[in-house]
Image (tube, rainbow, N blue to C red; front, top):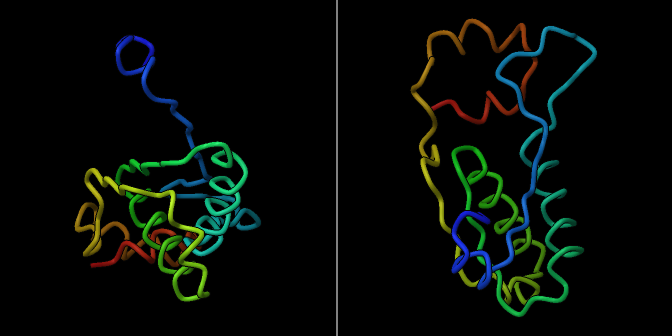
Length: 123
């Protein structure tokens, strides 16, 4: 974002990353499920945005599902007031209704990959 000085001067950008792979061939390596990732996002937001009054979550693809899971878990836990600083959720290409991309391949590979994130993308 430093290529656009007006934007980088006005806003701070914090990047949340999590482990995800379409396929993991190592049977001992498991990808975290969306609940686990949402819990990590809660910690990230709590720790790194403490000094901010307003926060916008901008997501891409499965990141939108993670953000939605985080928000819904917070509300279900009665912690909605802690979300007050989050003013916007912007989701780009979020598979809200699942993902048809490579659906046939996913159906064949999911049992072998043991990737819980892939199971969440079924339409």
